[in-house]
Amino acid sequence: MLGATALVEIRIDPHTLERAEERGASTDEIRDVVETESEVPAKRGRYARAKVYDFRQERNGRYYEQKKDRSHLRRR
Image (cartoon, rainbow, N blue to C red; front, side):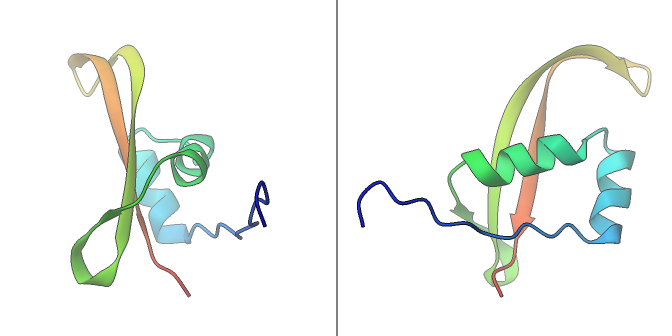
């Protein structure tokens, strides 16, 4: 059907949330990447999606203009 949007459940496991926090990524950014970016092949039969965000902040003692959030996906 043209124009139809498939609804996909996005589940983020606790380990992923912990690692995302360590790396400065938010749950909203993870969902944005998964919902809006195109898939590319990744290791171990998975897929990844990535997006570059304006950041313009210091993180861990270093200034960054941008940051890249990359999400690895597994289909069930």
